[in-house]
Amino acid sequence: MKKVILSVLFLGVIASYSTSAIAADACEVVLCMYGKITGNGGGNECHSAERAFFNIVKKNKHGYLPDHTADARQSFLSECDSADPAAIGKIISKYGRVRG
Image 1 (tube, rainbow, N blue to C red):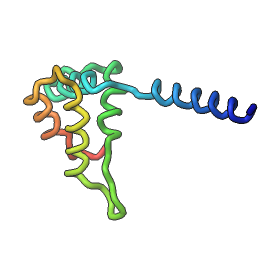
Image 2: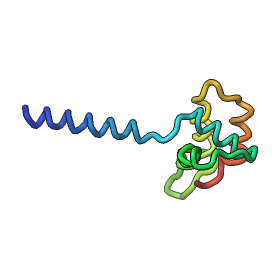
Image 3: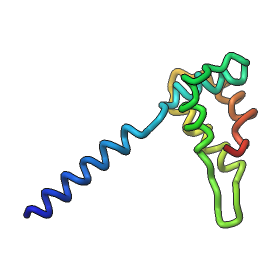
Image 4: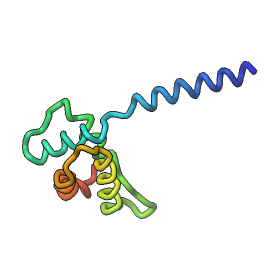
């Protein structure tokens, strides 16, 4: 019984760290990446958002998949309901297939 309680406690601690490790939400990423396109980058405040965007990478055993990466990045940005689809399209057309 003691092992079960310790296991559940350990999993709870791990789960709390993984949720706090999420650097940026989709709306923050859209805002920062659109600023990067227009030349109004957010500086250090947008570093984690840009990293979150460029960390979305799709690969297979043959290597990097630019089209799948762009689709995954667009899907992530689309999670922000208030984002303009045209802005998301501009972000994807410029940075969607770029390797992180």
